[in-house]
Length: 68
Length: 456
Image 1 (cartoon, each protein chain N blue to C red):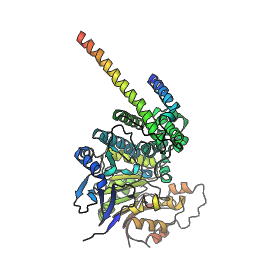
Image 2 (cartoon, one colour; image 1 turned 90 degrees about the vertical axis):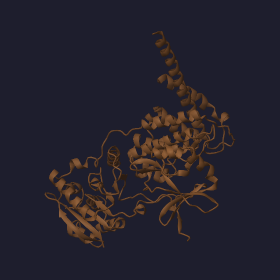
Image 3 (cartoon, each protein chain N blue to C red; image 1 turned 135 degrees about the vertical axis):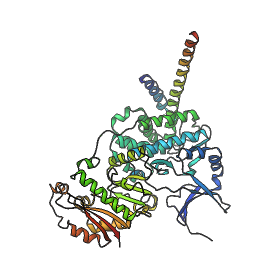
Image 4 (cartoon, chains in turn red, brown; image 1 turned 180 degrees about the vertical axis):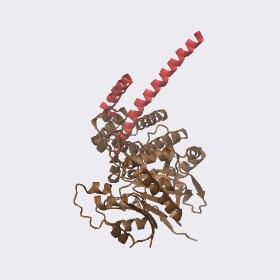
């Protein structure tokens, strides 16, 4: 889990370091929209990694079962 | 016949719909601009799914003859409470319900355009979205427009209640549109920066808001996939689920354990109240100073609704969780400070009403072991109390405690006794200006007397 947090924090930092070039907006809710995109990307990636890990685990499990 | 209509005073922001009363019945008219959204809500099955889970208010469609109006709907009636009157668990359940609704809406191609705490009310102690027109058609890749509102209306107050002080939901009284995230971020303790959810959704979010508050370039390319939005919602659900109150108790929560009367007197008190109940047979009862609701529950088998009001948020927390666990549908615990009641706030001081304006058809008020606090601790005269209770309901059950009772002596221990008028005769004189005494009973082996009164 701590590794995951580290990876996420680094991604967050990279995205947040220079966000003005990526999203500049006039609306006072802009910061919230950008934050939402950042968090969604991070947790979305986390969820995707989770699914991917599960798939790999299932794959090896299946091989194991076939071997039996 | 043209019936008299009045607009619901908080219903002026939505261009697509308006809530109004006709002959004291509440309706919502939906304008043509909302036709496509309303049709999708109904035809997609979202309405059915959410009402089946008791997450969305049910309504019936009413005949409508106006060309400008697409539909008139009649929602079921709910008693309105405000988030500064909720205990922590009520708030938490309301927040989780909002997120659950948004996740479900995405499955049906819709999204919540509003996520304010006023749209959630409680029916049978379970959270319910009352704003039928707060859904809009989801556009692929569109971020959740209500994310900021959700964080300010739900996440910030919950985090402040759990990590700073349980009373901080009252900050919503001075911040009707939600607690500004910069304020929440400043108030929250440093340790919350290590909570990933709170770091993202409050601390970093607040910094992002100030960073982009003053920019003058336009960028329309903010996109987020549906799956990413669902991951965001899951993250918020986890974050809120993990926000828990610290374990501590308050003076009032333990009240019944430290009363100065015996089990026998306690049972006697209950039996007198039951007798009064059978005399009046009230359907709607407001129990002031209800604590965890022991005496409120004496009415549960015959009443339609019991409002259990208490100043102590932890007593209400206990009462609410007990009611929820035991599927008690007609007890509604709310946090209420009698000496400074919920005010009317918002636009023209009419948007969110005070509690008294919500007192409709209340049959009975009850004030047990309460008025000595009002008189001695807060210096409220008896005549003011009689006036207040008589504005709420025609019947009153009230308990008078003699000054030589050990609890009152404890209250007077370190202060000057300036309460010469604190005696049974003065109490009766003040209350009989507004009420007739129907019954009066001493509680055996105590310095306490119960009264059943009827408004003159």
